[in-house]
Amino acid sequence: MRRGEPETRGEILAAATRRFAATGYRGTSLQDIATEVGCSKATVLYHFANKEALLTELMAPAITELQALDDALTGLSGRAAQQTAADGFVDLAVRFRREIALIRGEFPELLRQPEFAHIQRISERLRDALAGNTDRAAAQVAALVLLAGISETCAEFVDMPDAELRPALLALARRALEPVPEHPTQDKET
Image (cartoon, rainbow, N blue to C red; front, side, top):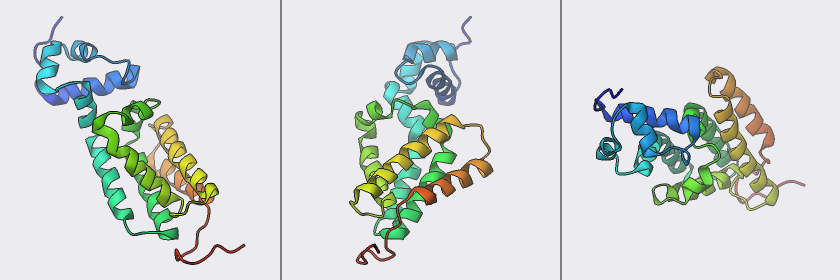
């Protein structure tokens, strides 16, 4: 039985969130979302140009925060870059873990879409900051593992209280990051 037209874009966004969580972004069609809302696909398309536009709006708050973190990292290096990146990314991942869970496993494909292309560049700068802005292989590997691991962990533990998840992730990040000199020109002690 049809309920009639959705009252707000919010109804469509909520249905998209539920469908993406249940069947993934790729596995969800606009018709699936329309059926969940109880409206026609045309009604969904009236509010959103396409499925990508729906996802873009769902992810907008997280993307805005990621861009703010990227801005905060500008000009930082060494330990300051690592600490700011680790604290900022953990906070962001914990806060938006439901959104991370929505795109779990589909992130590489989504980065190929024009609406999300800039996220790849931000992710690379975040990785570099976690590495202390050094090109040392061990630092780069640790940074990439942390980014992926923090994201995966947050997607897995969407219902864990923030007060438990955040400190556990921060402690892990501090143990995993390769120490870098306080000042970028200072050589690492051997």
